[in-house]
Image (cartoon, rainbow, N blue to C red):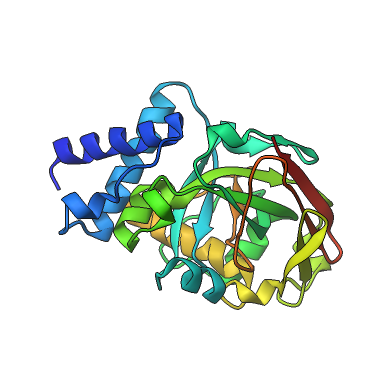
Length: 260
């Protein structure tokens, strides 16, 4: 794609996000779009936000579990950025009107104490660079009509990143077996889904390494203090105004929010 087309599509998708208005999947008008084009559009959206003073506080891995791949019909993990205004408070309220068709998924969040660079980042480097982990709920919200997309289109749309909530306990990775860590996601007081950390690429730290190695293609990396959401452990639950969601995670406490 030309720089002009990338800029036009970045504006198209960011306006859809900021105005909470669904739009047509961009591959319909641009059937030859590639994964590289998708990341170029995502990067331009990030550039637009930082130019207006928005801080980028971390990244998310997307589509890292078989449940999520099956739910949205794609087969490759991706990444997106986390802007400062994406963060909502544990136990707080999320404004439903500012989102299009939000879904909540349970995740393990990593917070770094050291930078990470690729290529060649591996699970050992990730664990050594991690300050602590926490339970997290990511609120994904595709800007595309009917939550339908192909891989380049979802990459361009910041991998459906919209909001996230951190809570519970912050614990060192050496004190936990992240593969067998169990969790339950509750929707309006009833269990919606159950899972364990191994659902994310076999070990959630591998999702962090994946993000680092994908960022290396743009000569970027992760910084100390960055938050990394490692991807949905189970399928996501759709939420409407008035809904309450709560994630309970073994050894890490709980995190919750209500849509208003």
